[in-house]
Length: 463
Image (cartoon, rainbow, N blue to C red; front, side, top):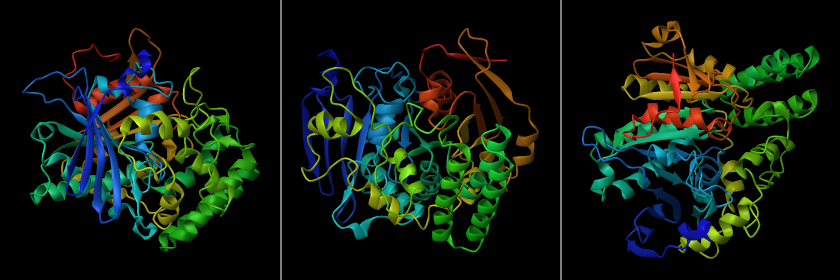
């Protein structure tokens, strides 16, 4: 029963013109809906940290977690699978990021997770529109809460969420400058982020050849399709590029005996994080269904005896009952297929320029990547970083990296490099889901990013 106590707290509901919200009796959690546009409803869930330290000179931070996809649920996946207070067994997570910050999970874009639209024509079709909806959400949450306004907000993203984070960062800054949003932007962190699809697909073949996963024949075929994708992106044929991306994923799979796109050391389905049953998001081809494993991530996650089963059952069962405000006709993840399909034309569009703009405006930008990720491979991330036009880039590239260690363990766990407001973390032994694969380094990276006043000793050391 103890593991369910946090779910049993009585909720208090209150209504505002375009929002419905609730909270636990002790005030440790708030959640609700914001109608970001007529008939378009976005769901959010805020956790206040029990580790909070009140320090006027160093305000306690808030992390806004953005999941990928597009169409993957931050409220479900990021919360219960990666960094939230409880895991999918509803047991406390000893590596929760609440140790360093408050956590705000959002089901973005509308139609994702518990978010929903009353008319499918209201799905967003690009990252900029998604950022506009998110900015509206932040205005509704922050503008009426002076306590939240005192905390710097750090936008932390994973996978396709990185594209949302880059556009949201700029949209947020504009809203702040125009006096529409009362918020302090602390920084943007891009984790294994799909910022430049061209650079990632070009990296797949050479990387897999280097680690003996494909041969010269597979390399030649994958490079050919990757070059085709490069030309399609250059010529603005983004729908065609998305279809070619699907073709390339199928080719990679057949050439590699089904390598796991989220950890290239494994076969597809071996990684407990990416071992999921594909939801049918699209009938177009196998590759889109394979990628949908991420959108419905961890659906085979097994709960302890007496638990709710897989993540779908958990979210649509005990969690939906706890939240109380989810409409009866809304199913968690029920509209995710529509979200992905609506954004297919923007899926392959790069957002390097947006990262450049954030850096030029002085925003702290952190990039982190798992060593054995394939879909957003470090090789591809380094390639797009080298395309930045930021005036500090050369100095950044010339700096030596600093090795990272966790606790008393003297095995190297990662490397970091920083110059001015650009920071990069290479996370060894991690795939696409860095907080799951390397929780120690991930948690302390968050400490670096947020400059949290948390009093717990750091788990890693530098030399």
